[in-house]
Amino acid sequence: MDIEELRTFVEVADAGGVSAAALRLGVSKSIVSRRLARIEAELGVLLLARSTRGAALTEAGATFREHAARVCAEMDAARETILPAGELRGRLRVAAPLSFGPTHFAPVLADMARRHPSLHIHTSYGDRFVDIISEGFDCAIRVGHLADSNLIARRVGPIYGKLVATPEYIEMFGAPETPADIASHEAVMQGTETWHFMDGSDVVAVRPQGRFKADNGTALVAAALASVGIAYLPDALIHEHLVSGALVPVMRRYPIREAGIFVIRPPGQHPARKVRVLTEMLIECFAKAPDVAGTPG
Image (cartoon, rainbow, N blue to C red; front, side):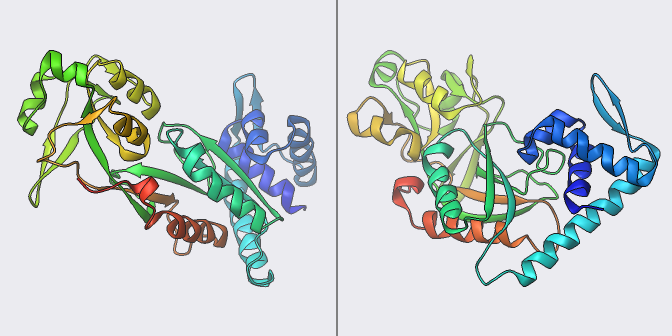
């Protein structure tokens, strides 16, 4: 039985349909359908119940999926052990943030593709937190403060930010002097997040309120520039506006708590070598990169 047929079946099972699996695999839907047909013909049993809404595992399919996934994982591990030193093959699916991901992370991924011509890299950019296990990603690059989860995280660099506003906003409404003052200000924000500030060595948590919300950092910058409210933003997104004076830092006695850039992967004892290589390249790029990390305070 062909390993690509097994891998295709696992992708369809995990993605819940042929279309989503084809997108993950980077092949056409017809190729996915033919591979599924061959594997079901070989086994003589229906593995997936198709409908207009997608594909659901049958009882036999659920059992076979566990074995097929283990075979694929073992094959990947075997390939890694016999590859020439440094060479990577196969496919790497990465989820990355849309906010400065295409500008700051894309060059690293492009360099990785240049160094490893047999490696296929598929990157999905978006500011929502994807479920990397159910959506079939090898890893994700995330920025900020991580919530507790069963995923494995490796910090690859720092991210600094500032609380900012336009001079026009400050002229109209004043500037907050302490974290407690934020409650009386309009904030542009991602949703219902908590902002963290440093008071000496203590962390002060604040729940801002605001009528403008967006899940994308660039959109929040635009709202801040329009004097809609104060904004809690990473230096990488606001540097040019700070230089021009369009935005100014406020409440500088209470700097934003340092955040981080992280590579997130599914739980497991050893990460795939392609994930390790990407992690090492990101550390090399961002661990001491002031244009991305910004400056403290």
